[in-house]
Image: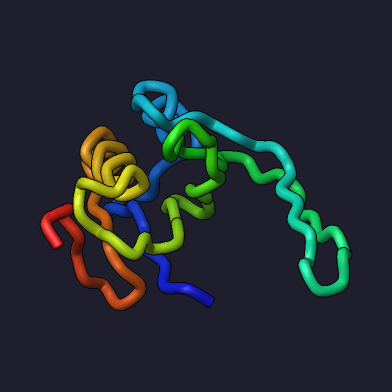
Length: 115
């Protein structure tokens, strides 16, 4: 399991607020479709149902499911590059700014896109 980052603030982020921020942010879109993947070893297809508030980021022309809204905060897997040069991190920072929130790690450390 990878390390997660979160868009959060003192007051919970309401679902409608999150959806409005996603709609107003370039290279991000709401994507509440189911996700499926094939196990390369067994060929078994594993599916996860859609979740309200899920969003994808356009990475190099491909839409990738990234953000998961749940209980007033948004979580995503930490990219290997946490600078603004990474499209996922750039989107997370833009969304956090739109929501007057911060990007924080599992252990409470803050990310501003400079490292």
